[in-house]
Length: 458
Image (cartoon, rainbow, N blue to C red):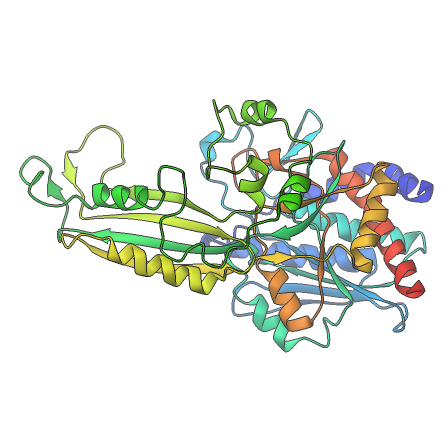
């Protein structure tokens, strides 16, 4: 551990400078205008893998953005870790809410502010630098493979094809991902599950053109009004989701499981203060920790229609739209939930409007085993690095490819993230603590060490 700490200390500024260079690329996969920058980001990642000591590094082309692959096989008889991450980021909008430019990383109070600082550039780059550390100190104990993609934020549409076509190249014993969070640096944790996702867009169309709200208002259905009424009806007074069949396959946690989950450190007053809200909100009968990790949800991610410019325009809009996401729990599937939503949403539309539901992307919920060699290696690594045993938690977000890896490669995943829920992922002023960045680089080599040792002793 002392060798690891010394290496990080001796290279602190360079490790930070390289991350800053990565963060300056506006690699927004959702917006085609950023395509040249996304491609440059892939090239940068490939170069840094080569610099760190990886072999067979390749920027693999797909129908979308490329996947960067690299490996270091020290002994075919030793276990292999497949590291996954993504170099694309969310759009930075709304830009006016950023205190400093989103693609010009800035340090404030020991934190790096930039789009992608935590999700996922800062986190996946820890693995590249941890690999460099092991190579430079001649301490790499097992084989390692890297697969860093550029479409995670838009559904990883081409990753499944790549995985199916490269099963032999990607053959490994475990997938290691840092795209999740810890409770805090004082209370380290390991996520043991993730929710799935169904993401779609709805459109409500009324008259064949925008109308004068005085001439036609009250006589013609307003699509914006109809849309918000339909959306409001999707939850009842207990914030239970009102879609027939939605909960049919949801497995309720046992009392002892709920008790264990709620034993994790949680300060509701601090939670409310951080978000500047007067009270928490959600499905009746469940705690905040349960609502965000073990219960399915339905949220409106965006809604628009009619005139939204400066000043006033008295218009009855021709159409209104919304983007909706549903987080899913084990036994629910994105395909079935998307179908249930579509059928229900179409059924509650009045005849005065036409409704279209367009699915975007989805992913399946996963639960990772806590009795595996890989999980135990992560436990030991965090316990040594932090001086405290990690607390098992359930993540509220989704990483659709975790289920894909299990289905196609037949291997489980360890979710060893170093971010915090307060890091403003997908929001203005996303951040990542410099301490967390260095701590990840220190901890990851310990995972490889213990994974190799436990694998060889089984």
